[in-house]
Each structure stands twice: as C-alpha cells, then as structure tokens.
Length: 217
Image 1 (tube, helix red, strand yellow):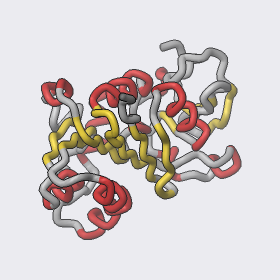
Image 2 (cartoon, helix red, strand yellow; image 1 turned 135 degrees about the horizontal axis):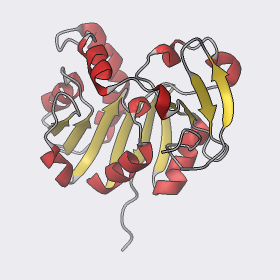
Image 3 (spheres, helix red, strand yellow; image 1 turned 180 degrees about the vertical axis):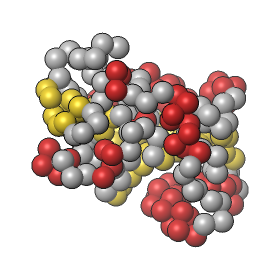
C-alpha cells in the first residue's frame, strides 16, 4: 500500500486531516476513513509489547461491564447454542467466556495470542471483534474475510470508537494509542455496508453490528 492510498477502499490522494507530535492523519475522499500512513506504524514487536501491558482480566467486573455493551445486544439476537468466533480476542478472551456461559460455542483467533488459522476455515453464526478494527492495516481484506466466514443472517459485532469531526479529533484520546491506525465514522461504515453487502446498525456510540443478509430463495 502506498502512503497516499486508503487502506480500506484503495483510493489515492487522501486529504490531510490532522498532525500531532508523532503522526500525520489522512482522510479518504471516498470512504471517509481517517488513517495513518504505513511509514508511521509501530513494528509488530512494539505492537505486541503494548498489548502485553493491557490489563484485561477475566475476573475484572469493570472489563465485563465494558464488554456488556456488545454482549447484551448480541446475546438478544442469537438463537440457542449459536456458533461464533472471537476475532482478535487478546490474551484474556472474556467476551468469549461470557458467550460460552450462555451455552454458545466460541472459537478464538488472535494474531499474537491465539494464532491458529484453522478457525478461519469454518463458518459462523456470529463474529465478535471488539477494539480490533482500528488496528488493522488491511481492513479491506479482513472485512471480506469476515463476510465469507459468516453464515447468511449472521452478525458481525464490532466495538470501536467513531470519528465525529476534525475539531473533536484534535483532542481525542483514542488517536493517541500508537497501535490505532484506522479510524471509522458512520459514513465509513455506510461505505463498508454498501461495498461488502452488509446491513449496518449503530447499536451504541461505539458498537456497530454488520449483518450478512440471508440468502434469497
């Protein structure tokens, strides 16, 4: 990917959106994604070191409350004993555990902590991916992969904070994490829905559901 190419829709010539002391941020004119150029990414080793310092404890009630924002609406729409995938689950896959408590089956995948790609050859009733999509260098590839992994009618449950406008972006803490390299807005998710064939729902300020339509008879 060239530095001036959008990682989501591959469009050239993005607009310069913001510059802080560390990085430049660009906005695609087509899909509205705000992103960091690849030349300013941290290395894989640096990225994992940052993740290793995250304090996500399976027994932390605060972490459970945080994940309940995606768990509760997802659980309400799942049929009994659904089969799912927690993509980017991290070292402490609490959301998967919460879903398993409700007798759903949940496979785990994480680039660093659960790297078994065999789970990416199956089909699922749901995929959850919380605080992941903002880390993806090639979201176009992963979104297409997620679509194919979902059974018709299946739900992709995402959690990520949304870009509002450039003024608020300037003081936005979310951009300060060096592993966050892509920032989405409602307009970006509208593009994703149209491009990949999802139906999009904004469940909460940072919870987005993308549903694969059911096959027509």
